[in-house]
Structures are given as C-alpha cells and as structure tokens.
Length: 564
Image (cartoon, rainbow, N blue to C red; front, side, top):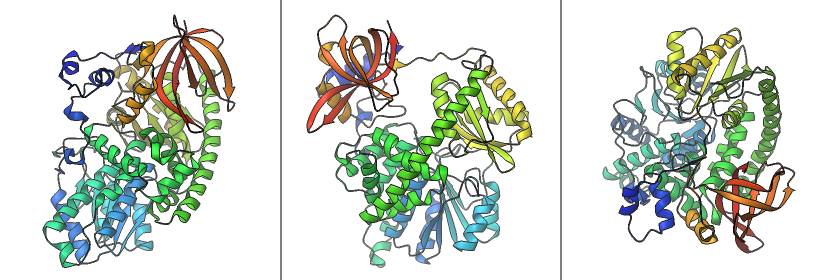
C-alpha cells in the first residue's frame, strides 16, 4: 500500500477558503487552485484541426436540409454521443437527422462497409457523421465517398499513421490538432463540434433568418457527463467541468427522462447523484443492450422526452443488465478455472484466454476484472464468425494501443485489425493464430517492462486520525467531485479491530470497526468480501455517506483488507 506524496509547494499555494483536509488531497494529485475551477467559462476553446471544414459541411447540410445520419458505437459513450448529435442538430433546424448503430454481432465496429451498405439501403443519407468511431474505418469511409455520401468523422481513439478518406475529421488526438485536452470522450468531441457549429450559425444570423430559437446546448450536458464518466477517460479540468455541469443538471432533474428512469431502476437518487453512480449504475445498463443485443434501445431511452416511454426502455435495459450479469459471472468462473489450471499463469506479464462458448459482448468486462485481480494486461477472446474477437484491458505501465502497433509491425499477418486507447483495445485474429498471438503478446509486454513484473500497489491518501474520520469530511469529499479516472476519489488506510461482522445480500460484509488504540466505532461495508477470520486488520477505505430511512451517517467503504 502506497501513500500519495503531497506537493508541499502546492499545499502552501492554496487559499484559506479551502479546508486543510481537502488541500492535502488536492496537493497529492498535483492540482493547482486554478484547475479546481469548474465553471463553463473555463472550458477550452474548440481549436480542432479541420473544424472549419466540418462546420461548413454541417451548415450546408442544414441550409439544404440534407439527410444526415449519425453512426455511433455500441457502448455508453457511443450511445450518448449519438443522442447529443441528433438532439443538437434537431435544435438547430435539421429536419432529416437519424441515427444508426452497428450491431456488434452483424456489422462489426465503426463505419464498416457493411454499415455503409445498410445506411444506403435503410436511410439514404447525404451526410454521415460518425461519433466515437471512424478513425480506423478506412474501407467504410472510402465506400461512403464512392457512393456520393459526405463523411465527417468525430472520434477520440488514437489514429494510425494514415487517416481514412473523409471530408473532415475531428479528433483531439490528430497529430496537428491544437486542442489542449487529449482526453475528451467521443461524446465530448461531438458536443464541441455542435457547440462550435451553433456559435458559427448564430454569428451568421442563421437562427434569426430561419426563425429558429437559439439552442441552449447546455441541455445536453447530462448526456456528455454520462458518456464521459462511463468511458473512463481521464478527468482533467476540461472533462471535470463537463461532468460537473452535467451532474448539476441531473440533480436538478433538468435532464433526459431516460437518465432519470435508469436511476430509478438502479435505486439511485438523482438529487444526490455522484459521478460513480453514472459509472456503476447508469452506464452498465446502457452498455448491457449493446453487449447482448442492440444499443439502439439505449439510444431511444435517452432520446425520448416522454417519461413513460423512458421507463419502458429502462426496464428493458434492466432485463438485459440482469442477463449480462449472469453471463459475466459464468464466464469469469470459467476464465478463473483456465488460469488456475495453467502453470503459474497468475502474476506473469500477460493473460490471454479463449473459449468458443464465451459471449463476445462480455469479454471486455471479464478482461477488466482479471486485470484488476492480477495487475497485468489481459486479453479475452470469443468466437465471432470465422474469427476470434478480443478485448484487452491494460495497466498504466503498458500503453496497449502502442504495444499492438509494435506486434503488428513485427508480425503483419498475425492481427486482422485492432484499435483502441492506452488502457483498452479491441482486435480480431484468426483462430489458428491464437497460440502465436498469446506468446507474442506476452513477449512484447515482458520486453516492454524490461522483465520486471509491475507491483500491485494501492495508492492511498494516508492515515486519518479519528477526528478526521467524520461525516463532515465525507460530505466535503462528495461536494468536491466529480472524482474519477485521473482524479481519483480519496482512499485512506489504517489499522482497525473488527468488532462485528455479518454477511448481507449473500456477498457483502457489513462490519463494525474500531480504530486501533481508540474507542471510536465506525460502520463499514465491504462489497464481495467473505467473512474475515482475523480481528485486527489494515483496511483501505473511502469516507462515504449512508442514507437510510431519512437519517444520514458516515460509512466506511472498504476497498482492501489485509491481516495485521
């Protein structure tokens, strides 16, 4: 267990308005007081390469009422990005704007030739806008262009050395892009494009000339917040602004009815919503549809303005989520059995698994869970037609997209296609190449890490005195969010005596803990934790707020337990 180092210079620089308790937390994250400002006026300006070209295409499409088709991705980021695009363009006067999302089992990922053919057949678009995809869609973009369809690609995934044939590409990670934050989610990219378009149209008198009310695009920030948190992108200041504003709207119920309906089925209150609720309650229910069937149900849930329709869609999504959980649990058990049967697989440099019975929509979740358990990059494959489709989840010390680039250059025929981020990627291989990929994947990671297995260390914000383990500090933390990737919620550690413990919900442990050498008792809960045999333990925990039957109290959220 590691304790975050506090930047003493930063600590001394904060104003007296910030409580000392929070100053230490901020200084341990290297955040200046200016970077704590989360007002919309602090948002970065949209300095994207090819922005002018994209705006010109969209302006022309609106003026001529062209048929616009939004092609999204089958996850929460892609779903929210699709809704932001459709809603925003409709607010700006588009009469013919629709969405189409690939079915992962039929069309594959992104703007594939298959999805272009389907779009021509079903939607007859004049302009295709990709959201959260497209940067690796070379064949699909080319086919669209050849078919007389204009293409705007908006994406945040890392590009390769060459780019698809498109009329404009908006991606903060393009080499010549001057936009300072490279951490936007797909929904953030399309929000920025729509915001820039609105500003351009307003300046040119478009709304006045066409008797269209000037749209307030703050109304889609609830969706931007949801997609940003669910995609686990780094919460730099810019993303924290977007998420904070979106959460504020949801708490005031100025948001999509679909989000409220999903919070209902997840038994979460909108009024006390935290970023973690979006990541662990709302996002997975939207993702479940894309993993098991068709994400369009989730998009319709977020698009509708009718609460009754939203609740109907939310209940369908909840049914998918229950099925997803059962499938995931079975796959995790089977994956663990494979690891246990292998010779000292756990703790090595990489884990690479395949079973022909596994569900290709669930492999990413299983890979993520195993990555957390073994602290190494994990790829899990499932059968997909004639090929194997895999999802990789990585660790901070291994940039997985760069590593796949390296393997692909060394063995050009090994990987059929791949794409992704630093921490997550997807790929396809031929079944007969699985053994070779398994070996070369592990070799590449071992070489990258210089034969040093990364240590699995939990970073905490240190030890708290009993006076600091308080409801007041739990509330300070809750009000100082949003917390998330790159701006982690504070975790503390300390030695405790277990006074009482009981299993609740069959899998979770409710405890009464006493801070060692004190008489103060604390309520605590440890999710997915078996009863603890020892009485004295070191616990890593978060300060959380427990609301029950109208009363509010402190509860320690246990993250890790080890005997003393």
